[in-house]
Image (cartoon, rainbow, N blue to C red; front, top):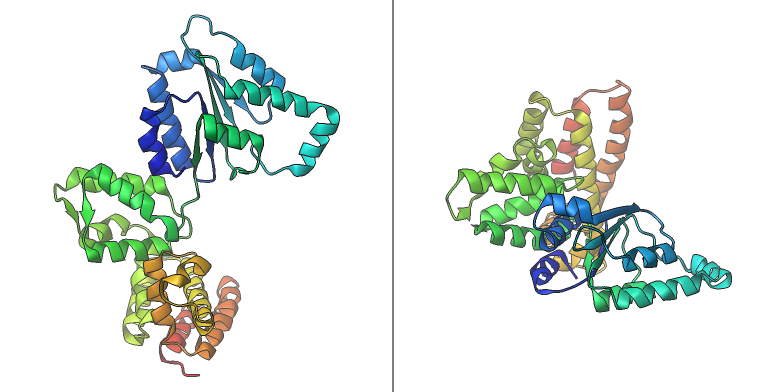
Amino acid sequence: MKFGEFMVKLPKQDSHVFLLAGEEHYYIDKALAKIMAGLFSDSQEAADSVQKLNGEVDADDLVSMINTAPFFTAKNVLLIRNTTLFKDNRKKDEEQKSSGKDKKMERLLNVLADMPEFSYVIFISPDKADKRRKIYKLVEKCGMVLEAEAIRAWNINDWLQGKLQAMNRDMDRDAYAYFQGAVSMMQQISLEFLDREFDKLALFSEDRRITKAALVKVFAGLPEVSIFALMDAISERNAQKALMLLRRQLDDGTYFTVILSLLTRHVRQLWQAKVLQEKGIRGKALAKPLELNPFIAEKLGKAAQRFPEQVLKRAMLELIDADYWLKTGQAGNEILEHTVIELCRGAA
């Protein structure tokens, strides 16, 4: 199940087996903390009760540890990080069958299906779990599974809605549009950063509704987000505004590699949106192939319609050359200005 559903159902369940699997460690850390808070009243009790394991663990050893009653504590909790038990590894499965290890796995499955009252097992995998495996199906049936899908711009709404609900806040339309646009500019989304900055908003403002002005302050220190206005001006093919914003970024000390990287990414997305629309993929349907939030994908699609494909192609080639010339010192910022002018004013 997804993070929000997992966290809501967790206090209502009496599960003894958990699987936290996926790339988004923020979700895994939050879920693990809540599991531990439900099992133990204080950190010392947890320290005395939890056995920490890492990587591949022999199935019979794991069965033995599960069945061993705890000494001096009420619970026996096995925390197994980086487990490989849930990975897609059919070749290894065949080897296990021929070596007799398959019987070990059957013994483990039987124990996990009928856990002792005092024992708990928490499996943590940094990879997406293979839902076809017997052990996955068993944990899903008898315990709880968290699918910690990596957060991208196109799937951040679940996190946003959950955070706003926890803060007892909402966003106005302009703030929502700015947030989606700002996040779409991030090369890598850090939920820790977003979580921390939204907590600051709640701490320093009593207003229930979050405004665009408040979010601009939150993201002001991130170069890739402060370039957001520049990309918007390019999307509008407003050369004067785009050049002014480009020069402001350079004057403020934004390194040319940051601007070049984001500009290249933006042109590539415009070109991709242009090609996809010619194939009949339009509006919010652009979200999946572009891996963008539907709101941003639709906006990008409308912007792409303003550009002749030949203009985008020339700009992409020029940006590839600019990467070499700027890094070797054979050109200055004027090459970025020329590319911006070509994008905004160029004709097919």
